Structure formats: structure tokens, C-alpha cells
Length: 282
Ligand SMILES: C[S@@+](CC[C@H](N)C(=O)[O-])C[C@H]1O[C@@H](n2cnc3c(N)ncnc32)[C@H](O)[C@@H]1O
Image (cartoon, rainbow, N blue to C red; front, side):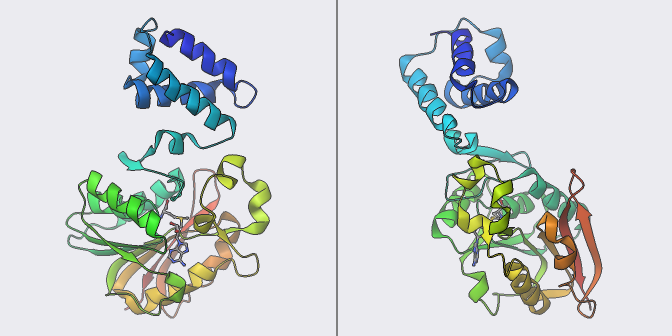
């Protein structure tokens, strides 16, 4: 089968499930992964013949896409902050909103040799990007999931960064190993009651451990992280949080003005409350 026929086949296979443009994007990503051909290569070489072995990979991908498996899990990787990250169903797929959080930190933090801690690291996307872009920072990253940490460690190596990984339940921790200039976290924050708003590909394929909190205690992680930050940020150290868009004010209210200054709530590109930062008072 030629590339041009394969392109037609994917549209036919998935037309009842996804819009045309999304199917085209899948085709480009699958071609990059399986044929090692760029978007331009595909356009320039429509008559190239695809081998039976590679065709089998595409056919398997079509099956998985039909049951709404995220394309990132199918090809096994994604991009975050211009870096490549391995992803499996053990880790949340890094989101563009989280890139905004990382960008905020990099724009703010100009000192060298910062001590940084990423709580609930998942794929390691925040910790690894900060280690890449903050000069000479010492970065640690914590998660409760052994399998997520295994992926994060691979990602750290693949991106030539040296991160100190900690296997720990943050909710059961009363202390952290040291004091930090920056603590950052994108913890689980979706309430069960918000499941109706979520698409099948997230609900059925991404790890619930990474996503959900109980409806009656949705800020459980923020309470704990803020409490630990009070005792483990260095004076003038800064806490950065990704937050639930519906709980911006409630989350901000946890940052008491006796302990924190320069409290800032920031919206994402869709105008939703998405990030908080606060500096520990001297
Ligand atoms: C929303 S994901 C964030 C992953 C990654 N930081 C990102 O931004 O893509 C939350 C992460 O918290 C971890 N987690 C859940 N409960 C935890 C706990 N009690 N202690 C530490 N980590 C926990 C999950 O394993 C998951 O990797």
C-alpha cells in the first residue's frame, strides 16, 4: 500500500469517530513514529510503498484510536516544552496548561543554583523542563507511583538531566528532605462530580490516581502542599501550583497572608483560573 492510499484508509477507518482534521493530525504523528517521515516527507512522497510490518502498526493504531486511546499512548511519546517525553498509561499525558506553569517559573526565577522540588511529578515533565532551563538548579521530584517514577527516570535520562527522585505519599508526609527555593506541583484536582465534563479518552485511559479527588475534600493535596511549603520553602522561596479552574478562589484562600506574600492567581489561555503562585514571607 502507498502512503497516499494509507492516508485515505485512515480517514475511512476513523471518519465515524473523529473530525477530518484530527484524523489528519493522527496520520502525521503515526507517520513520524512508524515511517520516520515528517509532515513534508509525506506530502512529497505519496507513492512510497509502506511495508506489511509497518502497515500492521498502523492497523493496530486504528483499532486503539477507535476506542479513544490517546494518540500519545499509542506512539508512546509526547512533546512538552520542546522536549520529548515517554508516556504510558501509568502517567498523565503532559498538558499545555502545565507548560504555562513551567514558563511562569522560568520567567520569574533568574538566580543560579536554585533548589527545586516538583511534587506529584508523574512523567517528570515539570521537573525535567525546569532542570533543563533553570541554570544549575538542583531538582528533586516526588510521586507515590513506582511505575510513574520509572517512566520519569527514563525521561530524565533521555533528556540528559539529573533529577533526585523520591517515592513518597505526599498526603502521609509531615516533612520534606530539605528546604527549597521553589516548590511546584500539579497534583490530582478533578472532582468525581466533574467526570461528566471529561472526554472518553481521558476518563477511560489516563490514570485515575493522577486525576481524581473526592468531591467532599477536593483541596486535600493543596492543603498538604501549602502546609509543607510553609515549613520547607526557604525564606522568600516561591510556591507554584496548577489548580482546578472551578476552585481558583477557594485554593487561593488557603494561602494565608501571615505566611505568604505576592499571591497571584493566573488564568490559562482559555481565561480559566489555572495557576497560583505565592512567596513565603521572610
Ligand atoms: C495531575 S498528575 C501530574 C503529573 C505531572 N506533574 C504533570 O504535570 O503532567 C498527578 C500525579 O500525582 C501523583 N500522586 C497521586 N497521589 C499522590 C500522593 N498521595 N503522593 C504523591 N503523589 C501522588 C500521581 O501518581 C500523578 O503522577
